[in-house]
Length: 489
View 1 (cartoon, rainbow, N blue to C red):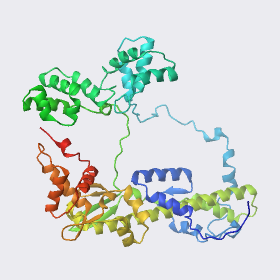
View 2: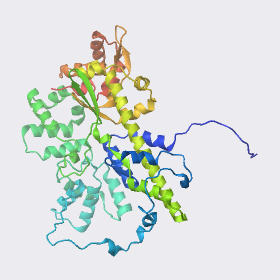
View 3: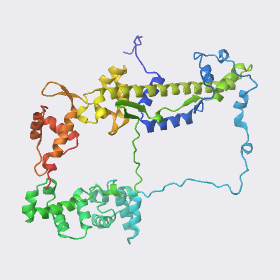
View 4: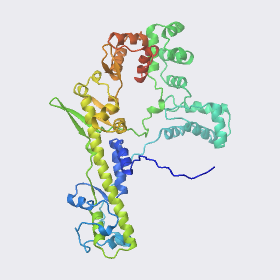
């Protein structure tokens, strides 16, 4: 049965200004600049640069809690100085009055040249134009090119391609024809493009090489002993082909020179390359750490004087029409929005600087020395307690910001790590353990790589009692393969 009832409850909600601040805090420098441009375009009451009379800006906001604009205080202008009717009627000006025809013949129209790169797939289509194909064959070839992913592979079977062309393109053909056209695709550059798997990709590249003894052996290995090659069973390969270790090494060397992702080698690719812009910089000055915030995060903004003057004009106006009230309501919204945005940017700057300063002091030994083994265990709560901010705020600062240090540009969240106990009962950072593990693996004999249980024993000898499964987890996080895959001849 449906019924109505009244319930009282307390709930906490973020104001629009708080939400705006949280969104600004998590933006890195480049994204923040883009957000600033968007706000400047959306809000004409927001301007960049120094305000000539900074006191005037404060006057408009002395009384923020005003509902009736008749009560707006602040005598600064006379009504005859600016008439709001001029503002309201400005859109009625005929177009011909806004045009000028005073350009001289020698004025140059300078335009910046725009790059027009050829895409990876378009380059393949252009190469197809060098082959003699009938209309049906060209349609099939172009469909196959369109099925190639960014890495250069066709990850679909020929029967699936035949069915797809019939259902989506109305192209009816058979598997034999598609296979023949696919061999034409395999002749395109870069070598290996259009392969259906890694084995075929490597074979296509090897067959493009000048035939030599090493290349011939490499082709045979990939074609007939691919599983043994991927598992690095070099002794088995040496016995299978009855070759010397040096001959096998030369053949493996030919394979290691190949590109497993031929699509990525396309020089005309128009992929966007993301450049990291550090949000902070840390320098060592006379033995002390000095932190600076990237100046692009601290733009100089102020509220437009013109919009402030419009508000003053309305105050002294005696006759207030409905149209004027609507216009001034719009102006007030833009003024409020501009002030809120300026305040949010100032709070963003302060939050970023305070948070990074706390991180710098917490990891002082590392920033002075650069030795990653000196990184202290640090979690978000440690910094949140130091600066008196919420953990989620610290997370927003750390997740997407970079700091330029004397030892390179680092992602801030990389300084955070859990703590583990060493054999003396002291807390050490997991980053320190990972660094030591990485050093041990780099120094191992690559002909006989160390398995995880031996790595665990070596770390235990160094004072870090770590279980084998933990070694495996850290190794995966460091993107280091198992011992068998690290083996070299």
